[in-house]
Length: 357
Image 1: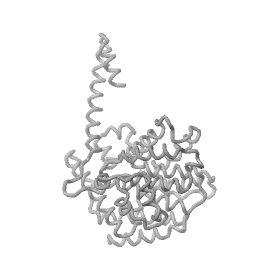
Image 2 (image 1 turned 180 degrees about the horizontal axis):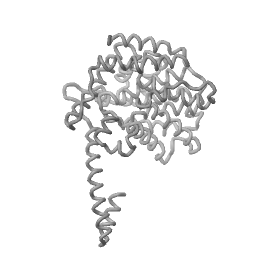
Image 3 (image 1 turned 180 degrees about the vertical axis):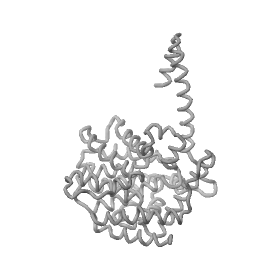
Image 4 (image 1 turned 120 degrees about the vertical axis):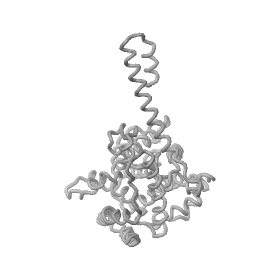
């Protein structure tokens, strides 16, 4: 659109058009530079020292039927789910296969009138959009999805549409993540930060692109009348995963809140707990997730040095201990108040915290 407008103005032999043309050229140059930076972030290539788990997964593919068979003996409700083991079993389509298995196990496509074929196609498109960054990749999303499912499956107060929206939010909540933080995007005046006025740029981008794929499919995964409500739920959930709004989101829900408001708040809390759930995973799994997170933080530190910015890197021991004390332990204590059966998650988090003392 911008290029077409530029060509139209260029053909007009007027002073006003020439001035507008020069402004548009300058704007296009800035946008091109920002897109170059964005592409460099998106297509980050991991070190040659070792292949990432995502790369190993994508080296082979297993069809949906085979994935379903492999998932049939997996306990998808357990608090001690091993996403790494599942990824090695299922390969390239771990995320989309797990999402289909969870959603179909609750008969949601039939209840909501959703085409399972179109849903599967949508989930594969989203899965393909995740980049091979060290931490915010499709393996992390599969882990978040399973933990969200394990939490919400302990409650029967949500409607089928709310449950489905929750699963979609979990699947798209880091869509196309570039492996750097919101603060980095803001500090470098990245096009995403400018697009969303420095307010939750990644989260706004994730939910916009994830829902755009869902809506632009001419076959439509969902009926139009259900799409509006789903979008409201998904947008609220994904935006709540920005740690910059953590305190605001985690405020206690008023006792006189309506059932709709309580459900909306709980869905956000469930996804937040699932998103940082590696802190409440078994010790060995937690160590793997922290190692992946460390790799991603070091990648950003290199970018910051190149850009002449102060490094935000901290040693994992210092940052993780504070993370547990300020975020994790209080968050899972709140979860247990509403889902008492989630007590094992709090216990696991307290166990993992001891690693950093």
